[in-house]
Length: 343
Image (cartoon, rainbow, N blue to C red; front, side, top):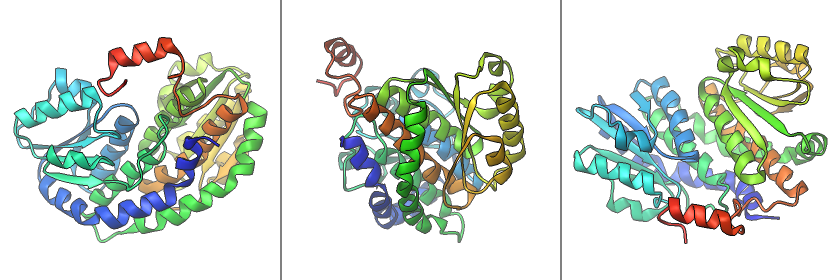
């Protein structure tokens, strides 16, 4: 087993740590950001977390926008009466740190979400998301703990504390390995995958595609579900495998049902990840069932079987998902030219 697998399995306890140890600082962060225009910034998986954060914080009344760290540097928005939440796995990412410099220069209130405790020196409030650093370059635990931290901040605006149920639901989702392995055996040799989500699960689609590309080098494209229908669907054929992620409480449930119908008529192999949308399950070739929770927390659960799928594809194809091709000198040289922390 590779580190990626161990990190996937560590998520229930890691998120429990986040909930228990970040709740007080989440309350402080919510107060710091009150009545401000909030910008969420990050790169890679952290930017996907920012996309989720935009939806979940808006759900609870915050004025918020996700913006990529690179855009914060070069296309800096109006920062008057704003606050920034910086999301990072390592707190060493060059682009994220340059964006942090912009924020610091403008003296903007700043919250950090990371597992690196050294970030405390750079921000007003730190939500340290785990006592365990994600040991794989194909980050999994480091992603879901960030989602948990963002949900904690959001829930500070309400009496709801639904996030307490999430570690148990993730543990249940981890118990479907055999079903995931069966799907991997059936589809791992397919050359192209799509992942569709909407609303909160737009971020889940992007994250699953990233895990496939960096973990097993498979051509995988994530799309906001409606975007797929406006032109891109004409490029789908019966060799494609398409994941559809939807919560039964989703406001886009009917549209996802119509999308599943359309893709089935084309002949694509469809797999839905759901907590109980039976009508969509009937339209798809396969259904991955997960536990039910409020829609705004669904992405913490729905990503779990998708992480497992990406991992087992890598294992079946004898690829080390922890390395992201670092063993190849060409890629090492490329990474060294791009990232300050890469040696």
